[in-house]
Image (cartoon, rainbow over all chains, first blue to last red; front, side, top):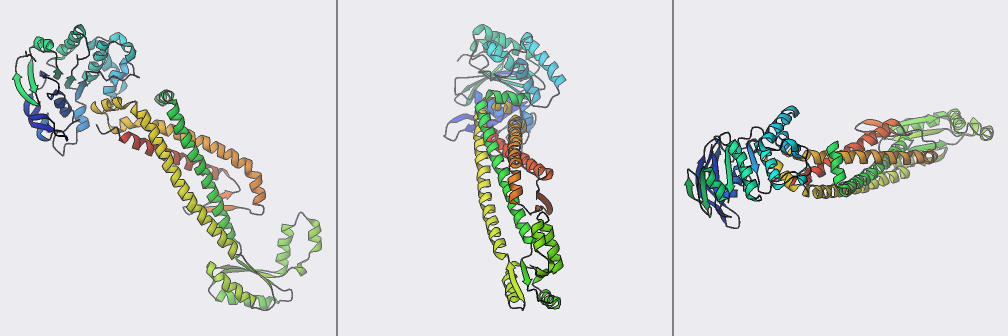
Length: 225
Length: 298
């Protein structure tokens, strides 16, 4: 479970990215964070990965207060989280297999486990035959599939996607969202997006943000910008 | 190894500049180290020579010489005195000129003076001892090498201080250049490092490839600089032999272990090589550590 408790984030120049935000996300829940640019969606994701720390308030993940000064498990926390970016962030000098394997290599997994796990997730994202292909030879949709495979491999039980379809055409976007559909109920999935069609079609919980505040917490999907 | 080679091929100019600066530093450091050990060895060698030698006239009696020796010994300023009789002096002369029969024929034990070789406890006693000896009867000559030892001591200290400054400059320069070079390489991989941090990589996991590459460059530079240094030293060996003619051995104390620097020997070369390897590895590791630090704050 992820709990945000009265979280405020103010940047040194004075702008407030989040203002007294509180919400809970259950284990294996799929949730959308929506709202215009600057609403605070990415700030929430960055706080979960501890790239940013709140100015006030607390964030609790799996009973650990990650905002506590004594919290020293940043690396272990990040090993539980898979992240998907709008710009894919794939490693251009590594092939598909290596790009996906990196998630397990950093945790020190042995090669036989890496091999079998990579095969499994590449099957999940539909890239079985492309494991030796380099990123420059892949389409945008395929690159995002690589990023998803990298995020879901291993024991990463929180999957966060920041505008995962932002750089994709509508058809590819749907294909990518079908992968999230396959993962639904098995992992905690947080998707920050602008794509109203996708959010509406999923009919899942939606947190609507505006100017750093949650203005709606819709338990069953559907919203308009 | 494959990853190191790939990284070098992808950024050949950065790798070459890192290699060249490491080579330059290690080569100069080896030369400095060897020059200093030779200087210290020479100083040590001169200090083992008698600091005051007093030659008596032929008419001087042994009793008279022994009396001078005993008085000096009882002064508390002398650590050792060696008496060289006429016969012993002749034996030494014969040994030194064994290849020159003409010189041997011209000299007999009778014409060689008896002498005392005196080793002072402290160099400051030397003028006093020399003055005392000059006042004794039947003295032919008092030779005293304080000036030479003092000058060599001053020279060695000056070179040591200069070398230390130069050495520090070399280290600083190589670390700065190496750090900058690695920073160029890392800048190309900034987003990769950020990603690795976000998926839970430890700092060591991220640093490892850069440290390994730097260590590879450091080791290669050490081997090359040592090879060139060895070739130069072996080429100069005949010149050194003629310059150090009569000096049977030079040694320095390293951590209380007497290391022979002359004649040239495998142990001395081994120590130069190992020192160069360690030095190269330390510079490479420190530079990689500093360079990667900047990108690990995610």
